[in-house]
Length: 331
Image 1 (cartoon, rainbow, N blue to C red):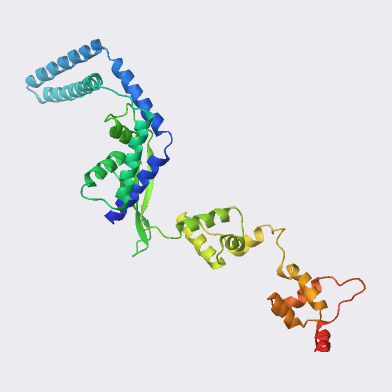
Image 2 (spheres, helix red, strand yellow; image 1 turned 90 degrees about the horizontal axis):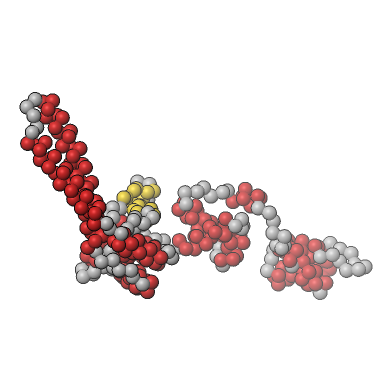
């Protein structure tokens, strides 16, 4: 694992998620409102009941420990009873802790501008860390990644297990709401945010990835490779190379170009070369230019030029002439 590359790509991905989550501000405000409502609805009678229940369970546990019994059966029965009592007491203690925390914490509802400022601050920190982390910023960046990913990123082998053929893919679940609230107010959300599983390929990005995505999009629009090359201003071999890369990245098999060319409907606006220059070839032929001169001027093969000149119909009262005898007579 290249740690610098992994840190760079992880920070870029988290920054992209923060910048692209349009509902994050609304969810943060709603979570703070729910926390404030929960703190205001705490009933002191409920808290006293839970404390009394905890005291009762504690006394039963102490009594059972003092009276385990003399026989193995008594000890086994007492052990099972202790396990159940301790489980009940842990549940009551957790509820007491939750109620006390709700009473003691002063819940503040941040404004939309404060939340957006916190999001922008996080985005800047992560963007800066993607370029290079200094020793001063390293603890903060580490804490941000740990809070977002809950301290867990699973790695999976991708590609072939050969030199420069494989790479590691990281998968983790993000919790952006907890991150933004902690940064803005120091509070935690009242309920867990929707979990999103993120995938990051820890490999050096190629320079032509964006161009390959554009070529793949045009390819899926049922465009011919020659038309794609003309639209992007590159060669057909370059289009083929980009298509192979895009298909490999998506785990798809590229369709055979010959079969695809026959499957796609012909472009009604596209005319063959001999039809496009037929009129000019006929005009030059009428000016008594030799065939090789016409081919040179039209930048085409002489056989194509002969086909071009014949494609244009002769004028009224004219007949088509054998071009070989015409050239000999002209010469």
